[in-house]
Image (tube, rainbow, N blue to C red; front, side, top):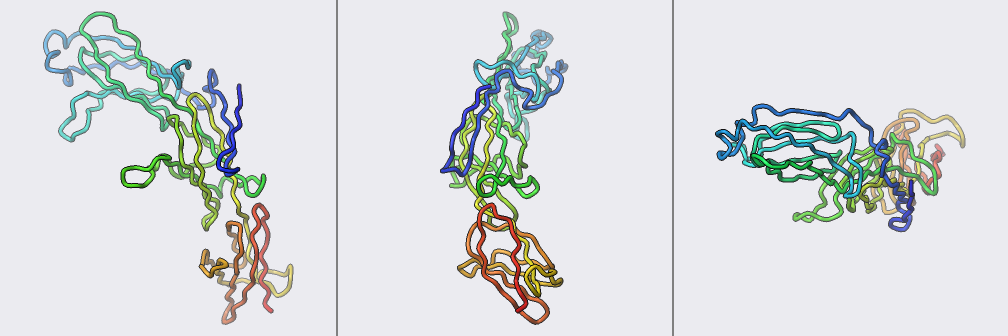
Length: 309
């Protein structure tokens, strides 16, 4: 496999693209389906409602990631639609199949074929003649895969349970907002997407450690992106002396250097993730209030102790 390395947005993301030609095992698989569609005459065009309606034409279909790619053997979802909208304004779904290459039996007429590979998909109009040759239908998805991970600081791997990724289209919509493609993506998960540039929002923890990065997915390749967070995980403790036991029933507020509250919690030693910067920890226990200024350094997880005195 050929591996390419590309820096994205001044080290906000490190991307590796692996050529997937002949390596679809990276996407998982299932058996190839073969399905016959009886009774399609109820959707047949008026011109085919007589003798032609009894003529069945077998059509084979296959899909590939790229124009020159091998047919995909699994992971596909095929859907066949009638071209005339129904009473609800939607195209009637005639049949579907999952797996790899598929075989359908049609009556003469017009149809729409849609094939999906994860979040990637393509649609094609199919005209089935009454006689004459019927070519195999080849659909080119122009799609690839994306795997997301993140580190804190230089190379401290962030646990998957503390990470959340949202994937948006890079281009803004007509309302000026970016369209959400996939939300709440976990790390080390392969997301199948059409080729193109996507806007990734990576959230580390639940406070303010958020990184945004644009990443390009190439057709026929698996892109592995590692997002670099400038943040760290901290454990808050109210103690009588340095290294002492944390005091229970303590209410906590974390303020930025500008005085904005970014986190509030209650507990002897709550754990939070904060973006790199200057903060103030305020601890309230019974009727007394204690505080301490502290600095968050990317990748340096630590305890923040607030002394009673």
